[in-house]
Amino acid sequence: MTSAAATTLAATNEHLASMSNTLIYSSMAVYTLAFFAYIFEWLLGSRSRVARTANALTSRTEAKQTGPAVTVKKAGGTAVLERPKVVVRAAAGSRDVPDGPGAHGGDEQGDLYGRIAISLTVLAFLVELAGVVTRAASVQRAPWGNMYEFNITFSTVAVAVYLTLLALKKNVRWLGLFLITTVLLDLGLAVTVLYTASEPLVPALHSYWLYIHVSTAIFCGAVFYVGAVATILYLFKDSYESKLENGGKPGSFATSVLERLPASASLDKFAYRVNAAVFPLWTFTIIAGAIWAGSAWGRYWNWDPKETWSFITWVAYACYLHARATAGWKGRKAAYLAMIAFGCWLFNYYGVNIFVTGKHSYAGV
Image (tube, rainbow, N blue to C red):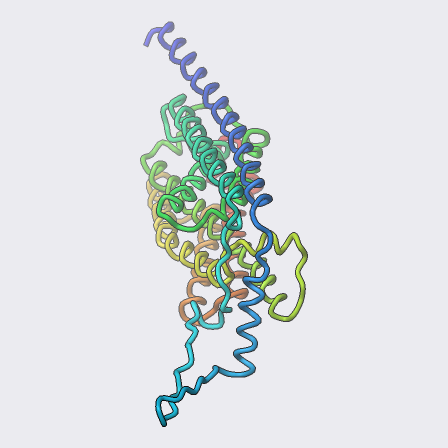
């Protein structure tokens, strides 16, 4: 390659890297608009929904105290006993509580802002995706060679998971506000603290396993994150339902927000299904990393901090799934286990890369 051609290539790469930065900042601007649209969806939605949960819990308590009602009808000279209605619950020990109507609370104006929020989320996702692809094109490699690139790719995949669930007609619009809030925080951290200039990979990362191992790790993290959000919301919704069940009176803010979410049993089930679905892929991620380590470092397992914490995360999620499947753990005990597992994943994601030195330390962070 001539000197002039090399200079042109460098300038082109620099231009693409600059374009990527512009696209990432633009996506943050659109995500911010989506954030406010989600806020309006919640604010303008109906707030008079507390009777739904309260009435359901009251009816359940009365049924426990009095037993099922038996109606006696006379058919000619014969008394006929009607069979009582049987309530089938979604899960053992769950409350007979209906799912909330969603963020907009069944309000037409709130629903309009919700649709606007989703449209803006789609637009922001496309802009961010273009920023990630442009970043990859600027150095002609996978866009996850350092923590900055990992962050922007991770947030893109997390939003993609959310939009995919919506496209599959799953009732997950309640995730929108919480998702976009954390995506903005993630991108803010990426462009301020973790930013790294676009540059070639270090030699240790030149492998096709970079595309396989790291991409699956990012996807698993995004799905684990969705499960963690559902688990956190479950803990709040369960406390809210317990307070109502015990005769307490939650504050108006809690009522306005939590009454619109799915029932705690639904959130619990959703979190479990999400974590269970992605766990086999996380197992593959660790195996793929071990194979890559064997070819790059000569040993399949070195007890490197990243390897160790990946395994700890695997054990934590395995304990969570095992407790649910065999010990019958549901509810708060299982939720605490799930949060511990996600905390391990978060430390593996941020803590190990930033604060711990090991074979996986590269490109600054």
